[in-house]
Length: 308
Image (spheres, rainbow, N blue to C red):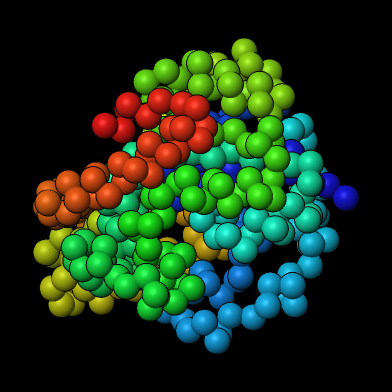
C-alpha cells in the first residue's frame, strides 16, 4: 500500500498549481503527473454541465481506495499530489482522515477578493459561468446545488477560516501547512524553506528552484478571421483534432492547457483585460471578508497585512 506523503488541498485559484509545479521540479519529490486528481470528491460533480443533487452517487459505492494507492506505487522519493478542491469540499475531510491518517496537507491561500475574481473569470472561460460578476456573487446560498457550490460559489469559498476549522476536526494541526501566496512571491526563499522542511525534503535543492507563476486565468476569443466562413469550420475542425490528440497525450491539466495554447493560440486573443468586474463589487467583497480574515489571523496566529 502506497499513500502519498503530502497533498496540496487548496485553495482553487490561490496558487496551488504554482506550488505543485515548483515541487514537481524537486529531485527528491515524486508528484502525481495529473495536476488535479479528484479522487476524494464525487466524480459527477466535475461535469462541465450543471447536474442536480439527485445525480450524485454515494462516494463509497463508486470509489475503491486501492485504486488510489496504486497511483503512488511507482513514484520515487517523497510522494505528493494536488487537488485544489479538497479544502472547500467538506465531505472529503473525513475521507482523508480515514484513508490517509499519516499524510501531510498543504493549503495555499490568496487574498480572497482577487481569488474570487480569478475563479469567476476561470469559470467564465470554461463555459460553466454565464452570469455577470455582480449577479454571480448574489447567488442564494440556500438554493445552490452541490455542483454550483463546488464551481460557482466564489464569495463564500473565500471564508477560509471556516473551511480550515472544519478540516481541523479531522486532521491534526501539525499535519497541515498554510502557505500565503503573496508571501511566497515576496519572501520566496523563506516560504519555500518552510515547505521543504514540512514535507521533509532537501531544502537546498528546493531553494534552487526558481519561482514561477502557473495557471493564469484566461478568457480567450477568436480573432475575426477565425469567425468568418469558411475559416470558422476549418478552425473548428482543427480544435477538435488538437483536443483529441492532447487528451490522449496527457492527463495533466496544466500540460493540456499549455499544449492547447501552443497549437490554437495563433488565432485567439485574450479579452480578459477588456472585461473588468465592477469596482464596487470588489470593494463590497473586501468589506465582507474583513471579519473572516481577522478571525483567520487570530486562529492561525499570523498576520495577513498583505491582503489589505
